[in-house]
Each structure stands twice: as structure tokens, then as C-alpha cells.
Length: 261
Image: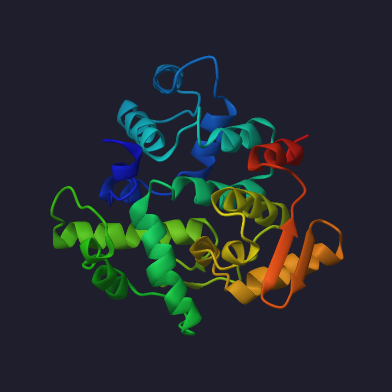
């Protein structure tokens, strides 16, 4: 399956396995760019440097990482940040952006279920609401490889809520409510760089749907940009409907290297 087709696959397996934030950080910090992805993941299974309790869990972790990330290509900066000792609080939101390039279900849930509920003033999302959202996955362009049973819907719904909590967007155990989430400054700047690589238009960057994954409205994004401009961390000029933005580095890869220099 090519990367374009894979980006629309709604994988219940990866959602049920969870965010795996610290495990992913540890694996990427030990990544060897002189070896292929398969060789790195084979090494993980062989050496078990995570101290996993079973070979099955290691196998599943390796599969999820292979499905979510392209360390030698698109996600190389994420690896460099882990190898450079980037603070986990800054790295987590960057990880979220990277894994949602191919994790359709998580991206769609955050942008089209969680954010609208937040914008509407809800205190959170309940399991029944998430299951109702999941039943419309195909209508929103998601490709479901196998029909989901009610039990699978329940597990996937719970998995999505737990991942959102693991990334700091929700809080609570049995009942999850919105958290007072704050995107770290350097993570925000990294995201500005990656979004500029997709579209250099400043207005398009501010209005990008990606910010919904962090519960940020366009007005929130522009407010933070203006704050960073005030402190000379970027340059943002507005004249009527026109806007121009100059960022610290030419590429997101360069900014990642700067973060861990």
C-alpha cells in the first residue's frame, strides 16, 4: 500500500495500542541511520532495550512504529529531536503532528470530533458520542479494512479518548474532560515551520486545520504569533488582508537541529 492510500486507512489496531509516547521516544533516540527501518526494528525485538515483558508486545510495538513513522524520510527531524535529548513535553506535540500524517483515525477524531466539541463549549466527550462519530468514518473518507463490531467500536473509542489524554488534551480516568492545554513555545514554532513547508501563505498557515489537534482556533494561533513577534522570535507583518511571516529557520529540519543544539 502506498503512502497516499495508507494515509486514509482507519486503523483500529494502532488506536487500541495507544499513543506509546515514551516508548517511541526511546526507540527513536536509539535509531541508527546507517541501518534500514527493518533492521532498526529487528534490533528492538532482538535486544529488547525497552525491557518489554513479552515478545508479542515488542512485535506489536514494532508494527505500530513501522505503520506510523518514516524515520529515514518525512519523520527524520522527529528522530533527531529524540536523539538530541529534546524535552519530552516539547517533543510530545511534535510527535502528535508526525504520527497523524498517516494515522487517519486519530487526525480525523481530533479535528472533526474533539475540536468541534471544545469549540461548542462542551466539558468533554463521552464514549457514546465517540462511537457515534466512529460510525461515520467512511463518510469522512476513512477506509476501514475490516468491519468493526460493537466491541471494536467501544475499544477504539476508548483508545481515542486515552490517546487524547496522553497528549494532554483531556484529563480524567473514567470520565474525560477537556484539559487546560498549552502548546509549548518551541513546539509551536516547529509546527509553524512544517506548515510553511506545506503552504508558505501566512494566512493559510494560521487557518490550517492542523491547529485543531491542539485545540487552537485561528485567533489563538495569530495571537501567539503576535506575541512571538513582540519578543523578536519571528517576524509577522500585517497590512489589511495581507500577511507575511518570517521564521527563524529556512526549514523545519533546521529548526529541529536548532532546538537540540
